[in-house]
Image 1 (cartoon, rainbow, N blue to C red):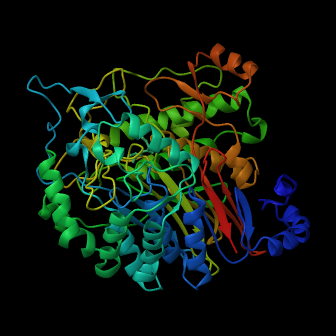
Image 2 (image 1 turned 30 degrees about the horizontal axis):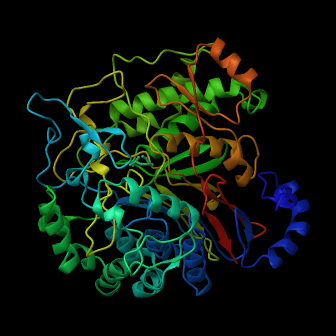
Image 3 (image 1 turned 180 degrees about the vertical axis):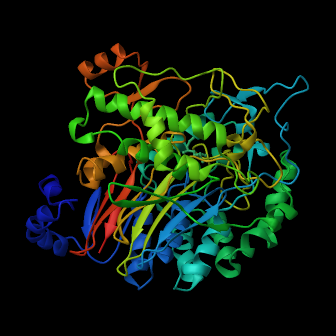
Length: 583
Ligand code: DON
């Protein structure tokens, strides 16, 4: 594949013409490719499970549009990529049709009706700690049945299909049922999870999750069948949204919650609705940016950061230099401070200053506050935020009609709460942990207690997910997103910057060195294998505190050359099982 890196779609039209001749033969040869990087003419799906990408591609081949393929891919991921693919969690979908009209579907989980701002506090008003699934210490808002938000995925996919799908709903759920019923070979990452949970899981559901018909732990490569999940999916296939929020699935969810100390009721499930929202829109260097509005902070912070960067003379800022990382870290610091102060569920926070935060004028004032020679200090007397793990999943879809979908959804932590009913076969999220758990309590460890994101009945918790579409002249140009908790906005930001400002093809942009700064804690996290010692030294001299991490982001992107009708998809090399599949 490496020989073809230089045939990628470019922002430079001259280069595209030269690349086209080489590319066309490659396209014709790779009509069914499953690679980390793939070219296609008619449709493309890039997800963290190559099997799920194939499911989406097959739907496209049958004449389905990008929304149809997204619904099918999302259900398939719930079977093949259960660390984050789900029906027991929630997320966001951003859609742009062939006329350049963009919309979004919000299917973020909600707090149950019985939830309250202080539900996780003990009698002294403190937030207790306990052990999470992985044996590490965690605050209680991420543990157990109380950490489960009312799931949104099925309602969201159903709404997207009702409004924008074209193939029958049942055709889109069926491939996931087949995968669950007939099984698929247990891959290496699932096998490792299976071995870990069998030995360590405090939760019986996860201990038994990867067992075969005889109740034995599966071997690597053995078919993993999930008959209970298949049964749940059949109910969803036959009854749509109601197959999850009413009937035997809903009753079993509520029974399970009651038995395990949870508070989700039939009324919560019945009342849950997904919402269509106008995407957040911005611009950068002549491109239009569409991303997710609140209750995600993703779109607002992304656009604020791109606006700030528009004021920098990037032509003279070398990519990968200390000056580049300093500039983007300072940009991140400012956007994340605003995120902490202002953002939450728009249905509960009616006066969020979204126009201001995404305006060019505000970005200029933020840019002017950056000292190009040294790090600012994050004011820890104000608000702070914690660094999250990296288990959510994003996929990007483009169809032959010119429609694209950017979808990110999650269970919050890897395998969510780890809890599930053995009769239903799927995992519940632990998304309640994304609310601010202790009103008024903001501390240097990164916990925040600001009002916009306090727990209230039926409120959606603030997210960082950032499914994004970049368009040029009303046509989709880049479809991108990532998992990674708070790091999501920054990895998407840097990838968009690499493509639009540094003219990298999307595959190269996905692999490019990333950093992460989230205001508080006041740290610059960097990918340890990718930042040179010299650059680190200069950054430290500028008073940045550097913290190495293995990898940032697991981006799944599609870049489209609409004039030449070529799509290029790339799945991050950090994704062990991901794949771009086109035709
Ligand atoms: O919505 C959010 O921002 C988080 N629940 C996403 C979680 C994630 O990416 C993985 N991390 N813990």
